[in-house]
Length: 362
Image (cartoon, rainbow, N blue to C red; front, side, top):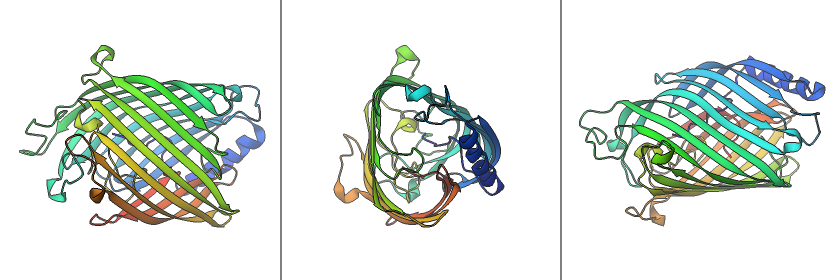
């Protein structure tokens, strides 16, 4: 399950301390560690509370072209009785010659399952509980300006602790209804010409990866996964940008239901409940207009279209999911343009959704 947990969502005095610390780190070029409270809200978690620590630093002789690295640790509890403890990292070596990124954590979550495909109904919804450790590790080596090659490893050990009696998962007909271990590895191609990784005003990001999950490397399921993520940023005026994103995941083989691609959540088609629509393949396009009307305040408008599909549930345009919404932004760091975001999103025939998080969706 793709819970984007790295460096979670800073709030109130935590945001102020982070901003000041980050500016000091840039001025002095010294590592800075900030201990911060965490507060966030998504439809899938309700309100969540916790604490975290973020370290910002540069490796090497402080070469001006070297990106700032970041390591985060944290834990949180949600009003849905979920618990997470995690660490994440994104580390650039001198002059960005190498990039190490990843996540390690342990999660106890309440999830909701509606079935598989693009035509599931709200009446199909059932709750299940799961715990799992997670390890993600990326290594990338710069081969030319802005272009990196490397590999990605992903490990989850998904234990389903309870399901709805007489529900879809209780029947045992859904692959993965008893949980299981995922272990996959494969190559990545990464190109990033954006002028900022947090709030770019121009440039292009392209990420393409292919992972094989196989029993020979510890996986209980045999399948492959291809991911393509394309983002393009265009400066419209001095205070506004247009960003658009094309994203796809394609799966081949026998995938457990908890490893299937999903639309929704705070990244992929905001306005849909994450996990409601899942299947072997996913394709979507989304765009966002970002306008900064005061030095630290901004507003956005966004829309997207996409769907999940498979060989048995072929793609049909009239079943596509359309989403749209408006949001507000508050810039936590003047130097790095770190944003606290509040988004209001919806989709025809779906519930109204609210997201209070940190960082941009894409």
